[in-house]
Image 1 (spheres, each protein chain N blue to C red):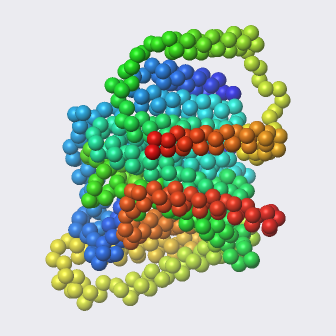
Image 2: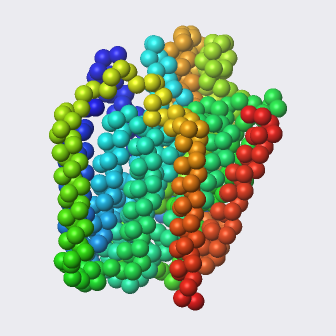
Image 3: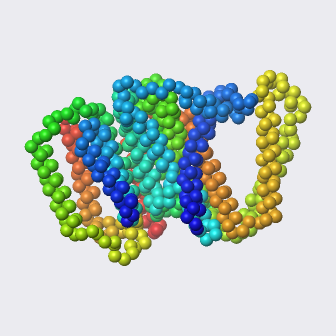
Length: 166
Length: 434
């Protein structure tokens, strides 16, 4: 992968991720998340995974973040509403766990040494929609369908929770 | 190919994809005004003139630009300035980017090189359109939230909810097309539409997927926030996300709407109306046997030139016509007829000269490929302009939906219909054994 592409995308992604957790304004956090997603998508594009690149854009930046932003606007969340207790025991515990996880990943990456170039040339249709479709609908069919079912359960659950008040 | 040639071609491709939607803005604005006027039995704008030339009212677009530039640019005191200023830029940028993946002619094969005539040659081109199209919501949200006042906020919520809802129908209606042509490369989809059904009918998307075409066009109108889905502009209850904007920032939102029309009609044309295809004339036929095109194009040019010349002779500004003009207009506008006569004359001479040149020097394979690409580009632009006009036509013909009707139509009408279309298409393909 092109080193310039990798490093620029990596810097943008990490900076945006820092913005996500450090901004007071909820909209700024959400938009930083969108920028982070786009940078990740660009990394996928650099790894010759065009389908993953476009799906990352379509699903995460285009749909998930758009929904988050929409809810922020629907509830008209300003900075006032979000100014609760900034530090709590749960948050501290979660941050500590996240730090441990990050440290473990970093150590593993360092231990493994610098990744070499992929051995041999990639097949022509690598990461294209045909090859991914073949994999998903033959080898990984059951996990794929179960994921769909889980999502359906989530939707039904959300509707039930929303209707309970009436 | 040398690198600088490659870079120039790439820049040219990007520039064309950038310029088409921008240049269509004044044309669409003009068509909107004139079409609405004729539909309502008025004459429409025809006063603004430069040196007596009115161009049928298109000068008004220029006057608008001058007016919008010199208006005061206001940022409300309570607005959130960062988001408020970012919103129109975001809206315009993503609207323009969507157009980049559309092919405006088939891959040009010149001198052993292949030049794709689309700014962004992506294998998942269709998904690109959907992805970048969904980014357009950010512009509305930023405007509604950044204005920090009640009505823009409500308008922003309405507008983004509308876009999110209709995106589902938009995406699902396209699935039928993907199943039939079994590709998501936009250029391949257009190529597949050059085949013939039953030996005489071009296999356009609208022929094989009529339901999807209707759903897609309706959803595309909703995505563009156009009538009958333009609750933004309801005069009785203006609850619009761009309520607080003025001057060029407002103009950017207005221009975005017309770019959205171009994008919507470009997508409709590409997916359902054969894109750059000229009916019954595929690229292979046009470039293959040199006979057809090498004779037809110069002959057409010569006929066109002769027709224009003939009509000019018949309608030439005779003395009587001149006197009528003198009586009708007592200002500089009476020179307009003279101006158009000269323009038409030059066009006729140009067409005749080009036709004669092509007769004397029959184009080789490269020349034929270039002529083919030019013809396909013209075909694409004619179709896009027509559907742009059709969207304007819809606006001045149909009444506006109420907000609850809008949501009911999207979720209870079009979404199940699009799903049913996918299932039926699947069954039919299974029966046909494809």
